[in-house]
Image (cartoon, rainbow, N blue to C red; front, top):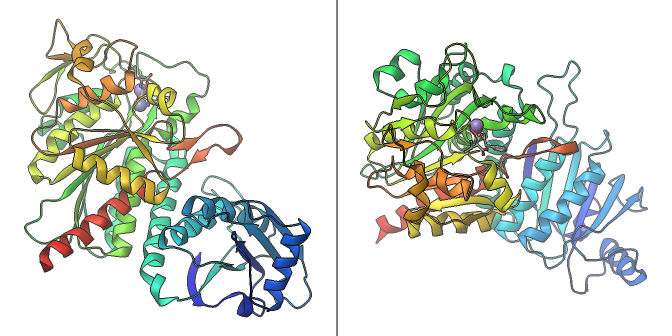
Length: 488
Ligand code: BES
Ligand code: MN
Ligand code: ZN
């Protein structure tokens, strides 16, 4: 799908060569006397149209309009959140018609950079179709989207950011949505390798022997139950000022989580194919970085394997030695995410990182705590937490800070190892984070528990691509920040 900006308002919109014209209608009176403005004013007056975000009036073959379909939709106060709602509603009307290939989108009031990004992401979301494992895949009908704005040049940078973010989100969704037999650790390794076609993206994929040789006994233990060999993916995008230490992103890549010997109940177990959404988000971020080319240094680490029961599988009570040297008593084989992440956290130290952010569908407890609205954010650094929270708000891909008091870690004590991999039932999302924190050395660290936000269940079952938008915003801001510091 192609996005473009045109300097054009409502007057020009009616003559624009397209299949559908969407006008976002904000609060306030329209004074212009062109036909579209008059139509909108009259529709508001008659009560057929409201400016409430997402309330749509769709019209067919309106006299005087080039577009066969016209959708007028309320965008409330024009904030990013309300624009997202408006564009989502309009896209769901338009995407129903296969004949709509070219869309023109404009608004009665100027869109902010955040609102433009929200609009682009909402068109992407509303027109997305998964097809990889269907015999007759349906293609996305929408091919081009032109956004009419008062000054196209002023928003050019924001559009590039929005486009690459969408492209990252779509790569993340594609890999996350694929069933586990079409997204094995080996295939994820190949997907990462394929990203090197983008400028400045480098990739290295390690296999079981190399991972064993590194001393990653914890990661190795999780992978043992499966016939599928594990992979440890190392992505690099190093474009920051040479001295800058990189940001390391670590994505949990359990391509299927049966629970292992501590096996899960069968209801909804299919959704555990999404247990690699953290990994998919890291791939998505690298896609976006490769397209956008910001001046920032980022390393991506993805430990990926299946969590399966079987004759070789790790057993409850087994004690393993992590790469850090700390021993772990695996009391529950279903708490496997932390067992693969801890070795990646230790590996991350070799990059002398400026910050480490891990992204994981880590706990059912986080779904209970925060649902599908905000991701859980845990951080040892107030500064890093503030930056991530801010990027979450800017992109409407928000998170909520959770505590890390030492008292929460008390339940991780073990009689047979340095620690156990589970604590009691209480505060499960926090105790998981406390476990991870034992593998963090000096650098600022944040953990994002995306168990509730990475995918949707039920009729709309599918990956969301979260938190790609938040992470890309966070990294781009760091690039802008270091450029600013250099100038001083
Ligand atoms: N991948 C799951 C977490 C999960 C569960 C995400 C449901 C989304 C929906 C993780 O590996 C897991 O099984 N965690 C256990 C931890 C427990 C054994 C301490 C959980 O949350 O039940
Ligand atoms: Mn599990
Ligand atoms: Zn899991």
